[in-house]
Structure formats: structure tokens, C-alpha cells
Image: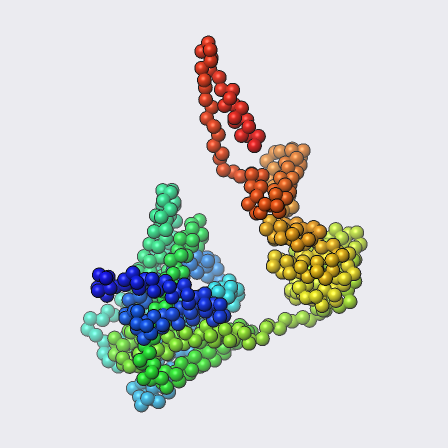
Length: 621
């Protein structure tokens, strides 16, 4: 094919990439190894040292790097400026401490490895320092993908991890400057090299342009495009913003990923945020998968086989020492053992920015070609091992031990009513029962909730309602009613199934999350269920109508009509599925009405009685 002859990609190459991605990701996720490792393995299989379907993985890697760029843009959309400002201590405190400590530790590891192959410290310190600096820059793509898969991105620990990654992205600029300085000291400065102050000003100028454009240009720009009504133009504009910002940062000598992140942050308060995220997401997913596949292709198996002892020792030494350094810094900054261990496992690897740093060191004469190839192999293998390391750590790391001071386990309870879960919903629901002196037993799994509720006069016992022994200890067998008020629908479903099976005589009242959950609960045989927001929403609507000047009689009739329609629709859905009864729900879309027509009558009169009848029937429907 012409494209292939020109060194590009043919159609068969595109099919091979998509096929390996489609097969590898589900297979490795099914095995519990994660999609990242699947993509890396797939790249190794189809790359130049596997089946040989691709001979030049660097071309694919350059394109696939935009997957990382788009990933950081989406993360930036979730990071509002106020939220980012709140993380400043983690970014410049925790992030800086981790990076500096690990560079120092890994430099000594690099010097030791080079001494092993006969390079004395006086000659190898520069290469060891740059090798350590490159390995410190963890893979943003690998870490963010694994945290995203585990649902940890929005957690407090996840936000701290993101802060560290942001600082590492910022560090690519001073580290590249460090390479230039070391090259000048050891090799000499090229005559055509720009001065350091010029590079710094260029980078600051790029950041200023992105900031000003995001603050004053992007929102009006997207507003104009939105009014045009062309959906594909909005998608093209979203890609233009991401790639244009990345290009601007690249020209300024900065990280493309950092530029995309900054653009996302500046657009995080925009009314177009969700649409931008939806437009970019499909491209991000495909290109990110392509990035991992191309990294797998880039592993030089020949170098690994020739230098297997050095590379094997390097992988173990770099990963272990970096993990120890990260763990120590995390503990110093107040992380508990679980968070510190998990962070050490996540970050104990090199990343994609190491390739940039090593290329600059090779071009500047700081690293030899052989050392650069060895360090690149060490980084790639560490990236491939990280999902396995994290999997093992998460599997065998003990669950966090809660401080249960003053909290008693459920035992020999005998209330007339048993509450399972005692959050805000249950607390309000309990007031009517308490007003009538109904004896109740309360169990909850949230220790903090139990301790806080005790200050308000509630005696709550620790107990998991999904366990049969806990239900027996809580008096479920002798209770007249069990009130299931937990927040998660799947937990409610498990408790309902267990109670209906083991205690069929007990009345079961359940809190439902949404309409579909209500249907499941009715089908499971609960005696009563209510959607958690239904009645409060009706009360809210009634208050609005009252403020708009409607009478109390009209409001009562209206709310009762809404309630009746909802009940009728719910019965229809139980029989015909979630889509049934849609006509009973009012909407605010304009319904086209038939155009009145006239017909001449004898005597020249014009009438439209038939049209009026049609309109009347439509309005009644």
C-alpha cells in the first residue's frame, strides 16, 4: 500500500491495533490484571520484537501521546481553580518532597549500577542523576488509568496522588534545563543553543497566553459555535482547544499534558464543560489505549536479552528504592499505612516523560546510547510491572482498622422496629416513631455516623445488615417491622432478599434510590417502598406554586394529581417495563398543534368547527 511504502500505517495495521486492543483489555480485566497491562502485553506481541507487524513504534507513540494529553484535559475539567488552589500545599509540598527525596536516593542507585558495569562515579554521576530524574517522573497515564478503574480519583488519597502527578509534570521543564546545564558542564554548550533565560521566558509566555485565552476567549468562542447548532463543529472546537494548547506548551518547551490540564482547569467553570468532556472522551479512550500499546512495542527485547542482569537489577533496585522513598515521605506527611503503601505501589515506576529526558540527555552527550537504551528498558518494564504490583498490594494489604471506641456490636437487641442504616433519611423517619414511644433497635456500619449520632441522643449499634448472624443478633426474628434505610441500592437489594428468605413474617419497609430500584423492591416483595426524594420534591413544588400565587386548594389538587399520575405510571411500569406509561409524565416540550383550517359554507360563511374539535381532543389527551 502507498501509506505503508511511505513509512506510514496501512489499513491492516489499523485493524491489527484495534483487534489487539479489543481482545487484550477485556481478557486481562477478566483475569484481574487490569487493562493497562493488557495493552502493554498486546504491544509487545505485535511489535517489532514479537510478530513484527510494526517496525517503527515511535511513529505510533508520537500520535498516541495525545491520549495522555486528552486524559489530562478531562482531569482538568474536574479541577476547578478553587479546588486546585486548595491543593497547593499537596502539589508544592508533598509533590516537591517526594520528587526531591526520590531523585537523591535513585541517583545513588544509578551510580552503583554504573559502577557495576565498570563506569566510575566520577564519570557516571551525570548519567546516574538524569537516569534517576527520569525514573522519578511516574507515568501519569498508568496511574490515572488504574485509579480511574478503581474509582479512587475523587477520593482524598486520589486527590493527593493527582497533586503529586501535577508537580511531576511541572518538573519536566527544570529537569530539561538541568540536562542542558550538565551537558554544558561536561560536554560544552552548543553555539546555537538558546540561553536559559530565553527558554524560561518562552515557557512563562506560553502559560500566560493559555491563561488569557481561557479566561477571556474560550467561553465566548464556544458560545458562538453553540448558537450555530452544528454539533460536529463543537467536537472539532473541543479537539482544537486541547491540541492547540498542547502545541503551544510544546513550543514553549513545556509539557503538552500540563498545557492540556491547564486548559481543562480554565474551562472547568464553563457552561460547556460537560459537552466538552463528552466530545473529547471517545478520542481520549482510543488514543490512551494506543499509547500503552505503543509503549509495549517500544521495549527493545534485544537490549533486554543482552543486558538482562543489569536491567533486571536496575528494575528491582529502582522500583524498591523509589517505593521506600515514597512510603517514607507519605508517612512524614501524615498518610496512614494503607495510603502510603498504595501510593508507593502506584508510583514505583518510571513514566513516559523519562523518554523525553533520556532523548535530551543522549542528544546532549550526557548519556551514551547504550545507557539510554538500558534506562528506557528499565522504565518500560517498570510500567508493565506496576499493575501487577498494585494488584498484589491491594489484594494482600489488610483492610483499614476503624477506631470503634465507644461503639458496641449488635447483640441481643429486641426492638419492636429494626432500623438498618441510620443516615439522614432514617433519622427523620425515626422521629414519628419516637414521638409515639415505639421501641426501636438501630444498626449502622459507619462508625463515624454512630459516634456523631450518639451526641444527639441516639444509641446505635455496629452491624452489617447483609449478614444473617448480625440480623439475628439485632432481633430481626422477633421484630414487627424492619426498616431498610441504607444508601446503596445494591446493598438494600441484598438485605431485602435475605430478610424475605429468613424472616418472611416480618413487615419490610425499604428506602428506594430511584424508580427502577422501587420496581425491583416491589418485585422482591417488600411491604412498602418509597423513593427517597419523591415526597420532598412534591413539597418543594408546592412551596414554589404557593410563592407564585396559587391558592392552597389549587396546590393540593395539583400535587394530588401528580401523585396519582405517578402511581398509575408506576403500576404500568411494573407490568410493561420502565418505558411504559410515559404519556402520564408531563414535559415542557412544545407539542405541535394541528393548524385550524376553514371550509367555505353555503352562503359564503367560513367555519373551523372540525379543527376546534381536533385541538380539543389533543388537549384532553
